[in-house]
Length: 509
Image (cartoon, rainbow, N blue to C red; front, side, top):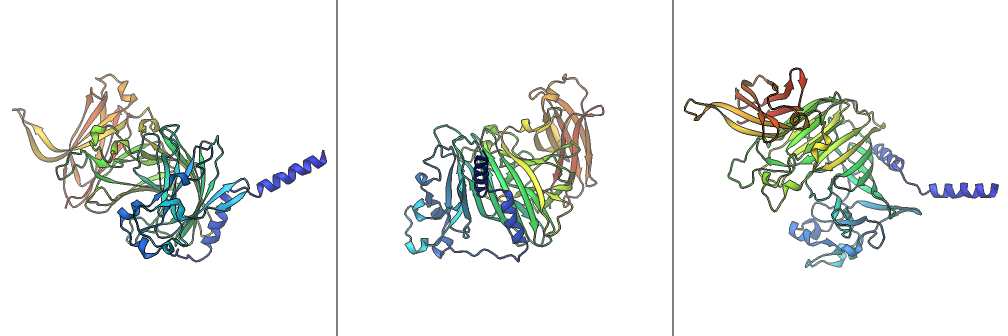
């Protein structure tokens, strides 16, 4: 019996010696933070660095070379080749029951199309990143993309029937500050070999930048709405002015609240149309996005946030009419916080963009107090990538379905509408709490406007089409060179019926 116990103990010790956890990455991150930053050196030959995008697209991973392609697990790994600005390789390791092994680059993994390349130029290269494949849409189709990680600390995840839209990041530093933004990068990954019956994939990542390092554990779970559970430990090398936690990056060009200034058959072009916040005091806030003429930064003081996200509210094809880019199939990104995050604020950055090729929207949470150098900032959250936004909302509060811009006008005795120099916003609220109210319920709106706006109309009426209520806010802008801040919520006597609609009319000079 004693011999058997000793044998089991030795086996346990031997097995645990190969165990890998977030603690192992934390050791590396803390050690890095204690040393001066060393910028990664590009190993990319000119033929790849100077490559045009169309040529880079010719480099395709050979699907038969997928990691775990011949195994029973539903997951596979495909790898990205270096090229263009993806000029620094990342290290990728596989964690197995017997150890941790680096996955070595080989040109045999790739089809280079009709590119004429000197074999010497392929020596000593590496991977630019990787993507996780999974049978999202059909059980016999294992090469659906589930998650992609390419460039800095960016990653994207989708669920069944979705296409890529907004991106998430590991960390944001000094976003929208005059000093310039710093882009931390994932420099090394460790991926657990999945068992055949495993329905999620565990990924560890080491983050590095001039002023911060980080250890990350990410568990991606595929489904109708895929999720990513994140545990992070961030160390500061030097002080930063603004540390962005759980950052999301998206694109907003135009929509009903800010229509295109040129004729366009598409009513809206955006990956996300609003910022949603669930504050620690249980308030829900909806802030429609803008494509401003100048950089705009909005902050929302939030202690212990319960969640926030860049949302794509509305997935009817008629809202977009785009057969190529299918904005109707792009998911929302919702950060569900775990534990107490303390005092801080959710920040929204809106950057002018002339077209839909630029991500011009960033949202993140930033803490009021940063950790001392050498001490970790520990955070946990779940990222939801979903097209079922109402499932994330409180059914006891109505939400904003749409915000529409209009010229303010007054109906004359002859029934002709006459513009009066005002600006109008039509806000439709919907949800079970409203659908259950009789149409003659006395619903009002609590509306506030900052000093740069003069409120001239606050009107609420029942909307029989949506079984909700429509708010019309009409105001006159005093100084077009300054923004106007508005807030509104539906009320039944003293009881809130809806989330708070919070909108900024951007400068118009």
